Length: 397
Ligand SMILES: [Zn+2]
Image (cartoon, rainbow, N blue to C red; front, side, top):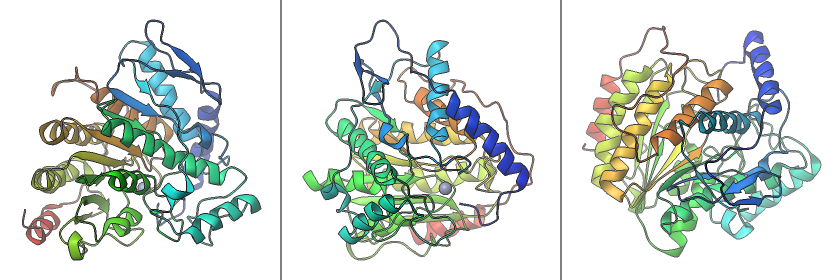
């Protein structure tokens, strides 16, 4: 979210790209005669030998509002880029997971039954889900879209947990990390990451780390696991909307010390975020020793994104992901799951997300190169050293 309105130029650009993205989706390509199974939406499912999974919530496709930043064009942009990279041979086959719709029981581990019912009713009424300026829109497909987004995250985490794949990315939308027990917020209806993690914890006790690099604080994820000793939540975010995520919020009871907020200034830039990653995120992960890392992957920190002011580049976001993948190999046999959160500049979103799919390929080395057609921001960059020092002190890192 952004605390200032879009400029007319930004909105016109958004509309143009949204229209182009919606029109250009076509089927994902695949290497050497894959087994094809038709899905309800007419897309093929590719069951390959890849250790990298992709979860696509086709149940979200009809939930879209032309001109709204959170539209179907977002996942279309990612799929289009993946298709292009598979066509030119730069991206290997992905294991497309069978779709899941989150059940009411699964949703109710995070959300109240009253709220789930309210979403159903708002869906029928076709209204916005609250009076908030940043509320998600309703409409006839809102409930099924949100249940599909959460179901995709569920499918991915369970597939990794069972060893069917090593890692992967769920293209969940609408996003989830602001959704709370009783409310929607920031385009989020159901908390996809929280629903999926809670589901894993339901069957067996595990240590799961959630790293949230969306430009906004994931207040819904924080609240869900604030008292939980089995889940470490770490968020790097712009110290701005939704005005949560203060560094003093460290968890309570059994969860004390398991909530690490790194509130960074506007214009943090690549170097500042990498500094936070190296000096706080990675040491905290090594101390916690997770059995799986789940990444709330938001790309709205990019300097071209209309919803943030973090001044990141695609190269910076790619480097952060590369370091997280490396620490996942070091700590938990490479088990890492990316779940889409924000990211509203469609060209940036497509490229940055596709870079993560490439990174998850076992053939990638530290010297591998990844596309970044937009380069770095030319804006002045803030100093983050003092903030990082405070976070390290509070968490004894
Ligand atoms: Zn965001």
